[in-house]
Amino acid sequence: MPPRKAFAHSGYDLVARSDWQDLEEHLQATAELAEARGSRFGLGKTAGLAARWHDLGKYDPAFDRILCGEAVRVDHSTAGGRLVLDRATPLTRYAAEVLAYAILGHHAGLPDRRGSEASLQNRIDSSVDKLPADIAAAPVDLMPALKELSARSFRDRRDPRSLSPADLKQRTQQEAFDLSVAGRMVFSCLVDADFRDTEAFYDRLEARLRDRDWPVLQSILPQLTQAFDAKIAGFSATGDLNRLRAGILAHVRAKAEMAPGLFTLTVPTGGGKTLASMGFALDHAAKYGHRRIIYAIPYTSVIDQTAEIFRNLFGDVVLEHHSSIDEEKPGAEQRDKLRLAMEDWAAPIVVTTNVQLFESLFAARPSRCRKLHNIAGSIIVLDEAQCLPRKLLLPVLRMLDALAVQYGCSIVLCTATQPAFDSRQLQTGGLPLAGRELAPDPEELARQLRRVTILRAGEMDDAALVEALGGAPQGMVIVNSRAHALDLFEAARAAGLDGVIHLTTRQYPAHRRRVIAEIRQRLDAGLPCRLIATSLIEAGIDLDFPIGWRAEAGLDSCVQAAGRVNREGKRPVMTSTLTIFSAPGRPMPNEIRVLAQAMTGTAARFAGDLLAPEAIRDWFEHVYWRAGVT
Image (cartoon, rainbow, N blue to C red; front, side, top):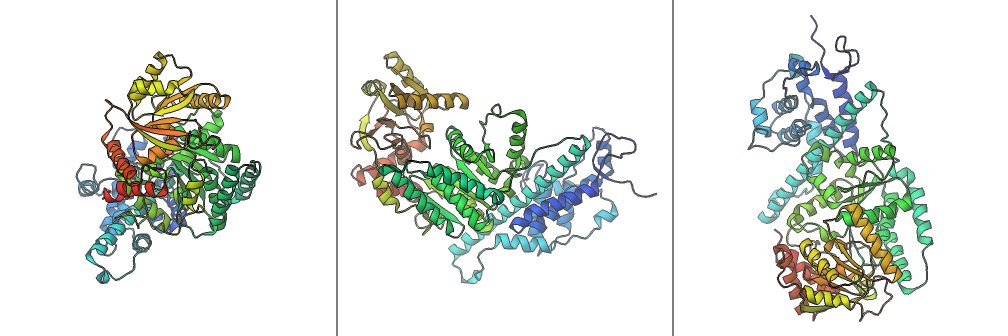
């Protein structure tokens, strides 16, 4: 009697099984999809092999009972990983382990090596071989995977015997990290291919159409560039500030000829960083063939504004993806397309948050990791790069380096206050940023774009802040906690101040958008506008107050807050002030307290000129380097 045919997924015909998906067909189709994804960055054979063996456990006769509706449990993910490990030689062992992690994790997520019931080692040790003899005896050639993984992991070809112990340790750590990233990329190719083939099967079965079609970036670059140039041509060419912004943009775009890799873009607030970075990205992609542009922003409070700028420029080729996305905005059909695109970031332009980007890059869950293979070959603009999480700084920088060196990404660290990420400043794990600045003479730009004076006031309690706001029909106060912001807001209202507005992360995103729109309207109309907010207002939100107050914090936050004062340069610098104060009875979180103390030291060393580029550099070096992030 011939062996019973194995199936991957069931259909409606439970008798003849005429509409079921054959397991061999699923494995082959998934392998082809995974290989196509991985081949873009040199891991095609490895991804294809992982996909070819990912569902071997479905050959277990017990799995057929699941397809027939029985409530039995079958671990179908471990069999393929065990087979690969069993076939490994000492030479190919680490390649087999990378494959095994991907195979075992393609449903439940990447497992830990050991330490729990769900760990790789425990699952392999406790698994029972129920594969048919011909499947269990099938040949497994791990050499192609070994070659690909080695190329993605061993970038330093020097003889280990020539290295100092410290250099050898650093290289070993780098190789281990690079191998982990390669494993994640293989995992991404596998899970996305598995999702897509399974989805295609059920779509055919249920006569369902999904709109996953997005234009390829390279095919629409001429139209995008034309739209961008038309937008720039419409700006006024009069006034010193507009001429300066135009000069910055032209200089940055001319740098698009530089070889792909890591870049910095250091332009003070109001200098046109957002459009300059996009202009660079368009030209750089045209020169080097990048597959998409990813614009990552630290706060959801800013992302609406940036996404709207790009949508107005480029239309519906922009995907906005973050935790607060308002799915009510587009129609049902477009909403479904956007939801699907959030799964794999197939859109040519993606506007997202740092959280979405880095959680995906370091995630274990299949749903998070699906998009990783589409991050490869991208231009990634990290807006407000100084907001990268300090506690996670070294792995984040190492990931950025791996994406640039191994996966064809160009990465722009875009900020008004360039942090000390350079390998010349950061003791361990810094990036090779020498000679990679896109802006023309950042120190001269800082001088030309200085539009505010920072003062230090010592202690100011809520009564003093309310009194100060009372003398400023338009002004802002930024504090370090939502509780303080609410108390101060209620005190200002109780004092009878007109135009008092409260803005914190306690509010829903839609509410924050309305509040920000009201602030802009009141500022433009010359109406009273007294804003009390937390730090969410600092990064990237285009507001222009005559005066402001900022509770003590890190210098990066204070400089960003200063960017909301006299943003358009229409007022005298000396009267456009941001006053730094300490809030008695409002203890700072420990992390902010350390940063504020570093700012106090910098102020003493630079005679209070906290906007000087040398002062900003000094502060970052103390925070990241001398204070130590290792």
